[in-house]
Image 1 (cartoon, one colour):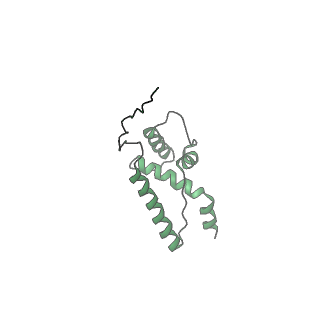
Image 2 (cartoon, one colour; image 1 turned 90 degrees about the horizontal axis):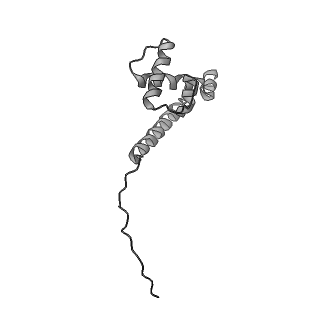
Length: 113
């Protein structure tokens, strides 16, 4: 009995995925620039994951069913409750990040020094 090798068509060379590698690379470069500039001038800095600052600012770090728009609306509402005037949802999220950053240990140590 003779066996035959069946050759399938090769997969396409380009298959789009959900991640944009250029965006990931840009984020890494921005973080590197902040680290270099902050270190040179003695400016303390901290990276804060979104679930961490949302937990501090909004009271919940993750919530099933929340999409990007819902998180932004929640941040704007929280700013209204705190009577902080913000122009858009990105500014509201920046307020949340700043408040969580102020509560981090590195910032407290820098303030005490």
